[in-house]
Length: 156
Image (tube, rainbow, N blue to C red; front, side):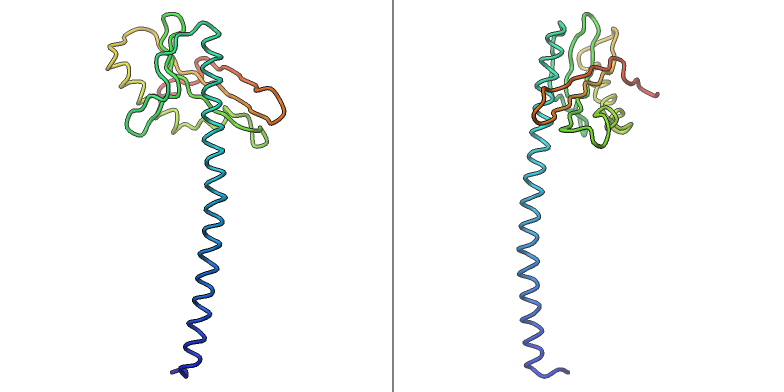
């Protein structure tokens, strides 16, 4: 067994390391929180722009951020008589690819699941489709939006 002085020194070093680790963790957490807040704000800004974009095309917006279980549909609207479920994908740059490539098959499945419940609740038996609106918010430039009608379909 180590002498008491070495045990105390070891405990002291441990406490200093723990203190540094906690400070570092708080610093990292603060950075991550700011990035997440920016990420969420970017997404919300894209959804607002996409809604205005679709309304300018003559759409009627029925719902925004409609949730069912784990799924959320960003925009539910009517394009004429067609009920449309829209996933909005926003990015601040396209360094890692066009925003539309970030809509995963898992996200598509969640949107389809939510859409099925929405149509049951609304007793909708007419035409429907799934669209994607990509929004690119590059600092110092005007927002770029692109609409992809019939971007995906259940089971494909």
